[in-house]
Amino acid sequence: MDGWYVDDRCTNCDAARQFAPELIGEADGKSRILRPPGDETERRRLHAAAFACPTRSVRPLSGRLDPALDPFPMRLDDGVLICGHNSPRTAGAHSYLLLRPSGTVMMVDTPRWSRELGSRYADFGPVTDVLLTHRDHAAHGRRYADRFGARLWIHEGDLDAAPDADQVIRGLDPLPIGPGITAHPLPGHTRGSVLYLADDRYCFSGDSFYWSRTTGDLEVAHSVTWYSIEQLAASLAEAAGRLRFEWLLPGHGSRHRLAADEMTRRLHALAERTRLLRPRPVDFTAVRW
Image 1 (cartoon, rainbow, N blue to C red):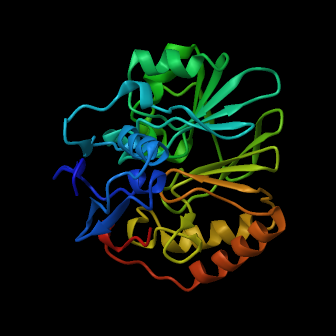
Image 2: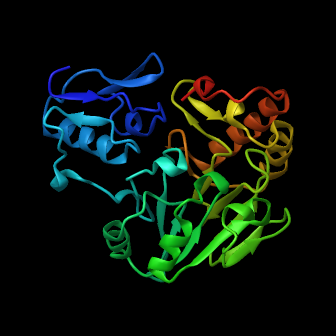
């Protein structure tokens, strides 16, 4: 399409498509531009997609993005912003800023590293904690924690990915880590996967489960479950009765908001569907985004 293109570095991580689904689609395992932006709002959406893309594959024909149209961090709700600038070293995962009533901030997983981005995120308040959901998203954790003077968290099951973590979550019991915030170990995707629940409103699920635009429901990434799909099923069955939230904020896959009771119903159904799954070879192309 005239005006914009997707280059051959695209890894089909889906991050860009989430910001402009009407403008960017998927074909042959890659993103592609469906049509050029029709107005300034759509131009801004394409810039958001481009600034989120971990490989910087979404480009205008000039090759240069307009820095004035970089929307990140982008507010999703009163208490949460999405960081953008996804990193190729975390397979393009999303990361978030959780704003606390005290005026402090927690970062959940990490965007690509740069000092300029660190300063931009710190403008929202003192960042006290960097919460890693699992090993795949640990790449820039130490650098951001040091930049902010923050504590770095990870579960002991994935500690080798962040051996210099300041706070190690141990065992399988939920752990309060701050006012209104609880870490819930959820082994399955990796041995040390954790989700973070804030204020019975926000669920940062890492790669344990996500919202699929294809199925219109909660899903697990069955084909990229590194540790154990059976363990993930058991973890979901155990957690479904104690998790209450409205916003699902995953590392990969779409974000979504529903009434808490509806999220609970769907989470129980997901646990039951996952119970029927069996191990399969790793296949990134099989994920239903």
